[in-house]
Image (cartoon, rainbow, N blue to C red; front, side, top):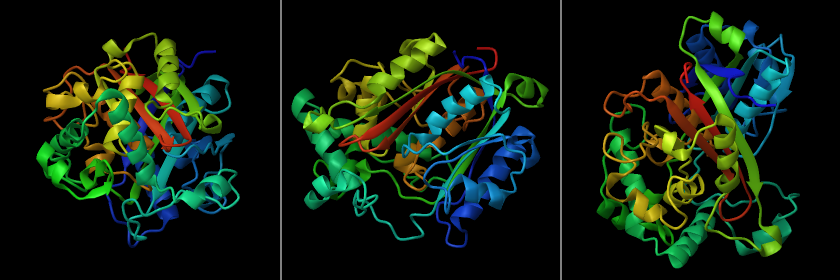
Length: 392
């Protein structure tokens, strides 16, 4: 069964806060839910499917369902694969809608790591003492940033990728973030700025790393029948792919991501190719994440990502592949260290023609959003979604 054309994104919302000192995680979830419903022209009583991931507090969906007063639910999904969860939720919601299990699905993300004092590279990957990998790996002190640094160094060794090429990803994101009043970092930076920023985990500098921010976002996935009844432009879901990439008992290649498998599945279901994509939202936890992902999605040959991003090729209005026109996780927002949902939000804005005029892709008809969860240096989840305008 295909989900192509079976479901639509009807409403989106990104919380404007980047430091939520006076809001709980539950409040943030509720506020982004209300915002997305208002954008779609729906109410909480229309919702009959709810999706969340590990960022939901308490008993996850059970706690949030009660807190938000979602009393008409027929379908619940709490798939947890880190930052890729929310793009998997799109496929799962479309599947549920196509199967008649729900017709209005609410998907929420929220968190407050910045208010809680988290700093770049300080959080170890000890996500649970009972996780099966912890006894084998935690003694070596893995953190988020040193695992990505290891992947970056391997890519450099194998393909000749340079720190200057990594820096171009940040430069592109900053060119877009200057037009986003909510972005954490709005100053345009140069390659030299990135290279002169402090080293965090060789070869990654501070400006190679995403921001740490609070807030969240939500979107509403609906059936075609509901979409047709709404007084707003809805975005069609054309294809979705998902997978995991693991260490395989130590036989692991750090130079590619799970996008190598999730991307082709999404393109095949949508019936399009990378050359057809007008705009791409690419998970950008670190600059190396983007370079590996665009290779794996087929936007350039394997090993050529560094050369592809040079000279502004990711900048809207300048380059071949406009990306992350809200500033992305590198400059705008990476709420609760799970930026996948925000990738969907900006892709929808582009397709609606609602991105900032300075970064709006002219006549944007097809967009890709990709989420990465876990770590490209170890185990990870990947999900790719192809979206189109309603007439696509």
